[in-house]
Image (cartoon, rainbow, N blue to C red):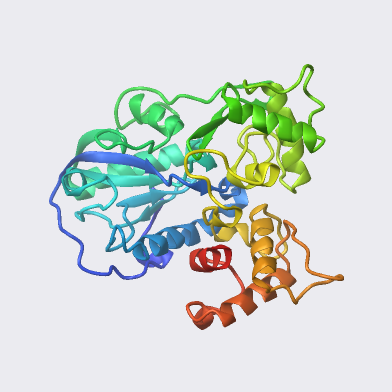
Length: 369
């Protein structure tokens, strides 16, 4: 088991003492329920995972509606299989829905989202089983392994991970902690065939509805419709996936294999860029997309979230650093981007004390609100 303690990932102190629990019925599995960049699962991206956990803790501590005392989860597991201690052993979780549910089970969160990175890696499944065993051996967790949605009305932990829970929460090699096998997501000929949910609407192979036709028509209008033989309709087919992949690559996304950034399955950033809005139950303004994590903002590297950041800088009037005639939105995080972010941070009282030019959750929220 690869375990990183709270001290190891740089946890902030709890706001107040965490409630002690001697044992639980078992463990519930969660996901983040927001956009998680697929790049977090890249082999060289593990150095960003501790910062990702710090971002989640910071967002929980800032949530005065839920009034969390700390990061809500007992542990988190990254795509590389490392377990990060959250509230830890013998501490009541804050993630399962209410006090009764929180006392009954620990909560382990996989670093998966409802878009972007949505399918667990084999290493992550190993790490989840490690976390369950850690809670059993050291924290008195019982044998139950359930999903967050078991007992609480939520989509968490997402369909791919919930299928794994229902099939027995096994390692990829079929061992422990209890029976069943994991369920792979099908693909065909290298074409992505899975779905994501954005604002309550499904996108990807097999999705249906007027929102699917809207995407197809927008792709044709933008010049990315060459794979249609007849034309777009309300059924998402491989042609939609191929056309959307072409559009994603035009934005600077890379990787066309299933579950890579340009695989043709929309995320909120690319969908917003295509349509100019996000259809669904809770339409969000472009700038209010979820914080993509610090790994999206690495000097000299590209990420589509940088385009969102640049638009916010320009809209707020922090664009004086540039190489050409004026500052232009782009996917590359440059020294000019960092200097413009630093200007915004210095001018914002809540950020001025740590004006390093690299966006965190609060910078993202205040700049793009």
